Length: 207
Image 1: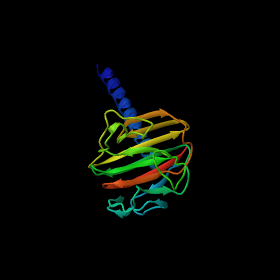
Image 2: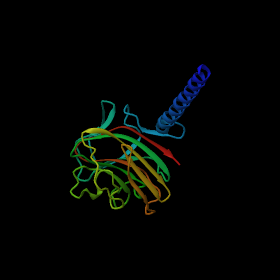
Image 3: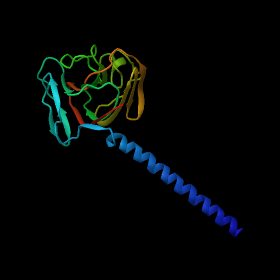
Image 4: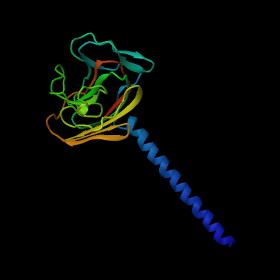
């Protein structure tokens, strides 16, 4: 009985160590997926970063995030990446007010003419009149039903664009998984259209 007990204890110990090791590897891969090899930080919460601007809003650094809450141009304001991107992953942490109209635009055809007709618009818009393409959707391309809500809290977007395949994860839940090849390459943008939007981390990894 004593020998069997020792064997059982040893087996339990080995199993426990395996589980711990697996969890450590899994967590490590998640963390490195945001800032490991190949990732480029676009927003670090400390500086404005290197962006072009389209439209006017009061973008600024505040409490460890890029913040905008007052648009002064007629059209929506955008921070536009200097570089174009074709295949990539994006990790973004954002906070939106309940009435925020914002989003992350992908593969924009013209960096000076930005909209849902010239880019893929991953939306942040809880109060959109037509919620079909509200928060979690890609406007005009991928609907959400029911629409998730992002207002009043910190959220994460994980976006993958590889060829025609586009996947969007909001707070760990898949909201978009489509194939579409209309836009193939271009800059990404961070939008402020209304309300309050904050981005405290945005990173991109070319694929």
